[in-house]
Image (cartoon, rainbow, N blue to C red; front, side, top):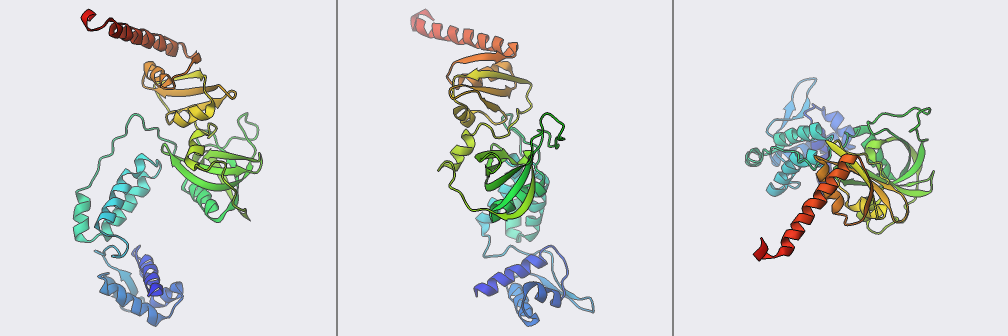
Length: 338
């Protein structure tokens, strides 16, 4: 029964894109006899899949319109969950908007009437929040190469791209030689894809932005290593050198914080950059819609700030300090003096 179900799903996946198949082609692809393929087709028809038989010398089989979801794969709630996920995916994984829309259209075709009606009631309009920090679209080929290497534990040879996605020439000052890495995990955080890898060139664990990598796959296998931290999320968020670049804002400023880089990296907003200075200090570059906005974010770290740039950020900090001091003085006067 398990083999029959698996084979029937394979058959359904072949017929799904709308292509017409001859009986011999289907039997070859499925590695079974033509008689077994006929039996599987009848099984799918009993499950209400409209598989049409095309007669004539160029005949064969094709999945007709109005086909339904596999009943053992999706129930009502699961189907709606997929619909919502596809409509909201571009807000967390940029560069997938067109693919998500095409997948949603394909899902609409295979839904039975009752689910299709529910789907139409869940058409969403996605509005981007100001605190979303779009990352550059990822080349699907690069993401596939990295994901395949992670799955099969194959070494990757990677080059670091510029923030705009172009490859620097060896004569450029920002050029870095290719590195051999062991890719272990893919992580999505703050709408960005990160790769946790062991860098064989530097003999260190690294976290790298996938959109900043030009990967060259290999077939060389590597053995799994113990991760540098038991909490993978903590390791990614607290790694300051991830290849991040400042997001595009009306205002961008920097400050020296009396905190270690790994602490600031974990809590800094997406689209900011943390630079390690020493074990106790780091530099944070971030943006906001106003200079006061940057000053307010810096204040959330509750630590000493020095070496602020540009002057507009310094002036904003002074204005906020005066405003907060006025509030504190007013509160200390008590109700009778207000």
